[in-house]
Image (cartoon, rainbow, N blue to C red; front, side):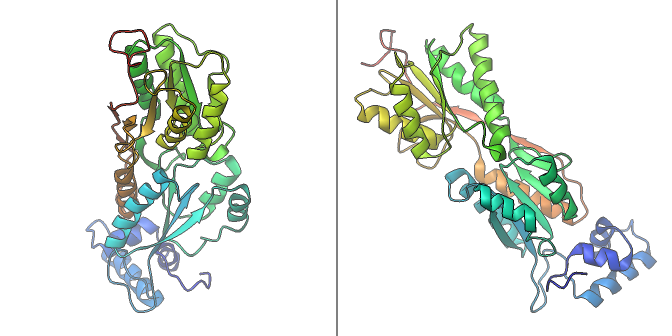
Length: 341
């Protein structure tokens, strides 16, 4: 065992000569474990000072889960992490957060794997990985659950991003818009590529259903926050003419987009309708039409799935529903019945 000051279920499993799942079943009193095996596990746990996750920890010991996130201060990530922490804290776990949002930070994490020997499991929040990075995570030999995105062989809790984006654009098309633009996440940002691809596919699906295509210059991408939405609006304003409607891949992008359009004298929704994605806590205050997803709930369920795995129970994927929330940033295009302006 590494000298890390932490004892995990895998340390007990190695000493007892059994699998981590057998350790969890033994400590939970499962009848499927033979008496000699249970006795060997209990003896190993006692020697190492290991306490079952969720039980009161002995003095000087903790139970910790690592959380990997790209932009932990952005609303989606902060909300998901809050859900994770709420469940883990109630079960007696601490969390160890690692920010993978910068190239340098990401490279440093995978070069050193600072969580090795320090966590009993990992929760990955809306991040994707290359083959070498996946191999590095596998080498940690701890359970991993995923909020959004996918990781082969790991439990995922999330939403259908493609369907949500398709619903957003169908709403715009249903209002009569035939010139629909897109404000996208950065498609070259590797850690979030899966979400970007799926939402772009949903955008394309809805246009194809209506026999429409996107006009050159009406798809812009520059990041994921409010500032990126501002830059996207500035680029769209240089298009001639402006699209009559825009789908933004997040509410934060939509906030920057709407603010900048209005400051430029463009009425929203009279001249341009805007739909976001997330139902950010400020979406209602901003009167933003959006696709709502239960972000905190995803974090909670991912944490519970990880606890179940640590306890030896199987945990399957969970897909939660999204829904369209119609507010004041969408309307029929100018000149159509019901249009503003």
